[in-house]
Every structure is written in structure tokens, then in C-alpha cells.
Length: 173
Image 1 (spheres, helix red, strand yellow):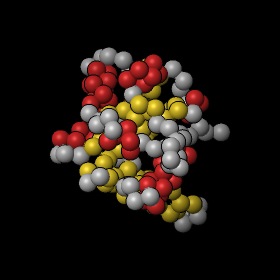
Image 2 (tube, rainbow, N blue to C red):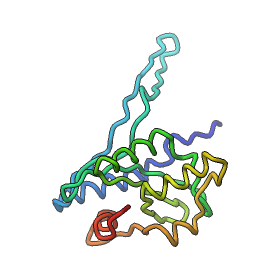
Image 3 (cartoon, rainbow, N blue to C red):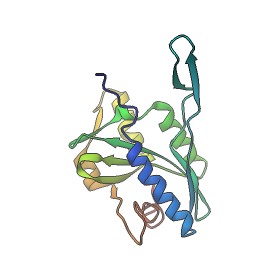
Image 4 (cartoon, rainbow, N blue to C red):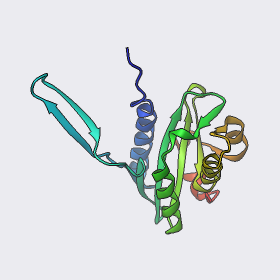
């Protein structure tokens, strides 16, 4: 049996989608999942189809809150002591950096699935780790870094993963 990692973050993304629906319902934000374009191939001989992404996706979610454009990606890991930077693509870091440079808010939400914890990691913090890894440094961010340098995303006021206050109250850099 072949191991696949294609859907490992789908449950986490669904939690974020529910959160974003709650934000819409409470008129706090409009943030939506960015669909990945897929190309479907059908083999008439075997009567099987397969799909592959048509192009690289930018990030998972884009929207607006408090008059500010927001873009972020959702990453999930089953690791308990580190977050592997291999989970992030170069083009995603580049997109989030450009988004911020143009006045938007950008970050990633990192789920430590086995710990059932979600942290908000700003693009600036992510970029430092990402660049260090590209230059021969660590290939992962230690879990302890998240504990001391990132905000834990919690449920609050009926919102499943209430990440907006972390953006606007602490002004994510």
C-alpha cells in the first residue's frame, strides 16, 4: 500500500474554512479558500481518471478584514518537536512577502496535529527561517520557537480558530 500525503492538511483547512464562515456570519471578515486549478486526464482504455494541479497555487486563503487585505497559508505537521520547512514552497514565501510589501497582511497558520495546537507565524519570522535553511541552516523550526515567539490560536467568542485578534491586536509584523 502506497503512503500519500496529499490530504494531510485537509481537516485543518476545513477548520479554517469553518472559522472563516463564522467570521462572515459575524461580519468580521471575508476570507475564502483559493481553489487550486486541476487538470483531469481520462484513460479510455482503463476507464480511470487522474488529476494533477494545473499550476502552482499561491496560498490557501485570501480575503479582507478591517479594510486590510489578508493572505495566508495553512500548514499541518504530525511532528511534535519541529515544523519541517520542506512543507513550504519557495513561491509561497515569495507571494506572502510580496503581499506584505504591497500593504497586505501575510502569515501562515501552523498546526501541530498531534498536539492539537495551531500557531500564527508571521511572514517575517518565516522568511528568516526559510532563508537560513536555504543557506545551509536548520531545515525545520523547533516547536519551542513557536511556544516562545508565536501566538497560539484559540477558540474565542464562538469562533473556532480565532486568528483575527492576533493580527490586529498585536499587529503581525
